[in-house]
Length: 154
Image (cartoon, rainbow, N blue to C red; front, side, top):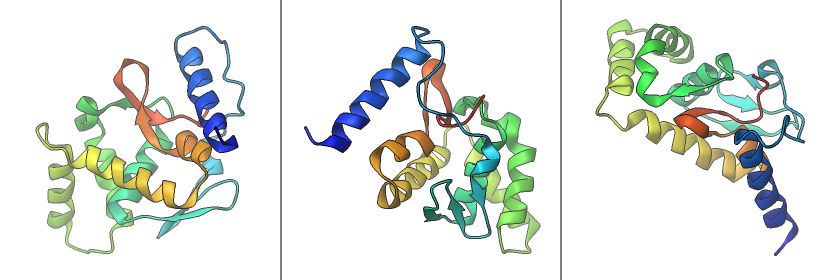
């Protein structure tokens, strides 16, 4: 097993022990949401890596940065107004109705759009970051069905 695969396996093991309550604190330093910069076109991580995202992907990532404890995807309607506001700033369109329709589609109960955007974000992180940082900084499902960014202080 090469070094990065071993490190990734170890990360998953300790993360699971932490979530199951066997460890009081995960032995990797958590970061504050403000340590990840999101500008008009990309995310800039603490190590300087830059990942280009679409306006919708940036809006979703910003939403999770604002909620480090995460949330269940079936509860996304509770974040509708906040997500619309964030997307309104991220999108270059001036058509307010179009922006609302995009967020409506994203939050539909029977839609897989939200999960699809999360998958796209993960693939873009995989193209730039090392495997452990991908796991730390991607939005993924954790205990109790909560989706969150694992590296963030809660």
